Amino acid sequence: MIAKPSIYVIRVKKNLLPILFLIFTFCLLLFSKSNLPAVKSGLSLWANSVVPSLFPFFVATELLMHTNIVYFLGHILNNYMKPIFNVRGEGAFAFIMGIISGYPVGAKIASNFRKNNICTKEECERLLSFTNNSGPLFIIGTVGILMYRNTTIGILLFITHLLGCITVGFLFRYWKKGRDSSINMSKTNSYTQQKQTVSFSNLGEILAESITNSISTILLIGGFVVIFSSIISIFKASGLLNIMTLCISPIFELLNIDTNFIQGILTGVLEITNGINTISAIAYKKLSLNIIITAFLLGFGGMSILLQVWSITSKTDLSIKPYLYGKLLHGLFSALYTYVFIQVCPFFNFDI
Image (tube, rainbow, N blue to C red):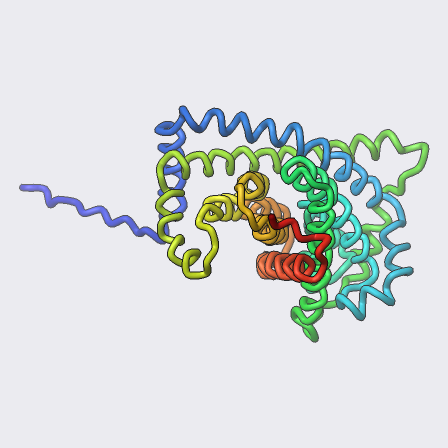
């Protein structure tokens, strides 16, 4: 008997991720010459910028979670957080630490709040939308001083970034309003009883635990930085970035915006640091446009930060949707506020 030929049907939707992973692996081999320097650059960026700026804050956050500071802030600031952001006062800890420390501390605290039953699911999702922000050390130090070589630009970007996150927080006070679930007090009491309060007798143990948890998070961030450095390198080496630039350029020409910004924006949407560095290096008479685009990228955060946050929230029942919507709005509001400041205050206008 003649065997009937077998027909293999590949369901693209079902096998999309395996196909993408195969393509990525193949591209790593094919473009290894340009990819290796990109990986080294990503590792250098992580070791020299991310670790020094974030690791101490991760440890500090972990230590503070072993104190009564969260409940103290909750008691003091409940009269402000509830009417403005529709979140109980304990959320002020996530808001303050998210502003001071930078990505992804706010998301980590919001997830910890959910794990420890400090806030409801809806409140933690509201916190996700506006507490995960870029810190002053990165905005003023790295972006303002190192990239733009101007402290005033860094201060402007930080002010508008802060105003953008507050605006998003106010808008998201209506997220699932009226559908708030209740907190299981038995779980909260159980957590309070099990949680070790830091003292001189157990300081070494709690410090070691905080450092271990912080190392795990910082290594996770490092992995994302390296992977996205590779992806950006592949996009450039394969010509995909040029193709995307050609497709988008008619829109920029219609809006009378220099097409040189396209690659920087596309890179920034993937990974924030590389994108902003590209934008700041573009020589353009109207420097205000560079600054406005930078404000949007700082607010949006990029896909790398999004996936970092997703990896953190995936261990809880929190939805990633409010974070995604919130960051898109944050980028738009930050860019709008930057434009207004530049137009209204000549002090912030750096056009030639």
